[in-house]
Length: 408
Image (cartoon, rainbow, N blue to C red):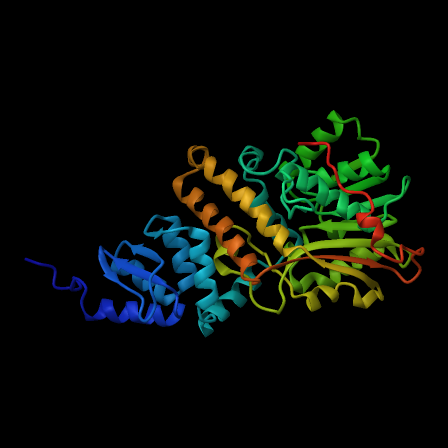
């Protein structure tokens, strides 16, 4: 006896669902294939094909396109024929905005993943404590996990990351003997670069245990323990007085509910006489962060609009001296990462599982697409207190000497 609940192959309901998905993604040149049945895009020549395993997966994509696609792609229930990055760029440019229930679910996720001191540790552990060997497969040799800087197109990733750190140090106009506090130091590359090349003393805070242990080992190996102290603690517990505050790639993990706390930590550290720099993924307008990325990759993440980031400085009267957008540099950075990740896919699967590898591949490809379509931006903000010593009148000091990193 046949199962009477089985849906007819390519029947009216399936065609209706496919039609609704086409309405959602707009005029994207994508053929949808369900169980081998082809549904070409209406009114446009197809450039890509998305193969969907079964009708239930198709329903997931209709009900919640972002979460449904992310989960189904990770599990191998959806395949994309064609360049994944270009497919995502195309869809990002045509897809309609999130539905009301998606916005409601996003607000609930923000509440659940709110970056309190306890929750922050859990969120950071989820992403950064996956194992240093994993990140060594596709980051540069110093494990710099933030946007690189390519003043010359032929630069390697290693060279561009050193150029980025030098660019930051020049912007802060570091002087030998000064004290610097860094919030969210990753694996320690910037703190060590500042101490080694600019003669400053650094206290670097981070709540990722694996990253802090790695950074401490590097400091010992390079005989810099007298100049750099790596502290496993939350930015809210920063104490002491410093000349300079720097944070690279951490504002995304603070959350808009905690910008006042972040600003207070800065003011406690440098008062009205100090200066600093924030480097962060942002947006041109206020909107919610990807729910799938917050679910699977970066819990608690939020990319602020530029005006939201300024709220960190306003309560303390800090002057914003310089804003630079390095969006195009981040595209190139993640292209390097994705290329290295692709070459290490087999090793990633051996270390974890296929679902993990596919999820991270989608995350990296989607990040490139986000920057390509200007959905995401990369801002560097230089700021200073009202009593800060006079700084350079122009940007000449940033470009007077070309960055020629020693590491090839």
